[in-house]
Image (cartoon, rainbow, N blue to C red; front, side, top):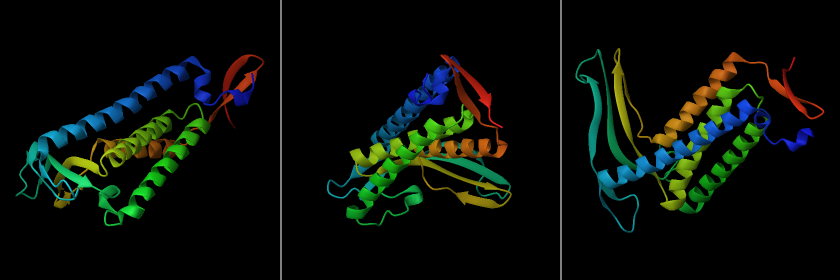
Length: 215
C-alpha cells in the first residue's frame, strides 16, 4: 500500500475510523446548534429592525442564570440572552470597515482558515486526539459564523455574561455558540501542546498497516 494513498493517517485503523465518525458528529452538531440557537435568538429577542440598515434594530434581553448579588464585592455571576449584531470580527473588531473591504476580508480569512485546518488535520499524528478535536471545533465555529456573514451579512451574538470574583469585575463581550466552539478548540489545542506527546506514525509492511511512536 502506498503511503500517499491514505489522505488522513487516523483513517488507517478501525479506531481512527470510529474517531472520524465522532468528529463528524461533533462538527455538524456544533454547526447545527449554533445556527438553531441564533435563529431562536432572532425570533424571540428581536423586536424591530430597519429594512434598509442592518445596524438599526431594537431587541430585548432576559436573565437565564444568576448567582450572588452584584451589589456585593464577594462575587456574582450572571448569564443573559442579549441579542446583538456583529458586523466585525471577535469583540466587534473591524466592524467600522467599509463593506467593500470588510466582507471580502472576512471571506478570505475564513477560506484560508478552513484550508489551513484541513491541511493540519491531514498531517496530524495518530495520537494527537485532543488537537484533532480542537481543530474540528475551531473549524465548526469558523463555518458557523461564516454562514451568518454569507446569509444575512452579520453575525448574531446573544450570550451575555458578567461576573465579579474577589473584587475583579468583568462584563464580557456578547458571543455565540460558534465562539464557544472556537475557544474550546483553542484550549484543547494548547492543552495537548503542553503535554508534548511523541507523535505516532503510520508504517506500511506489504499490505499491513502498523503504528509506531517516532523517536
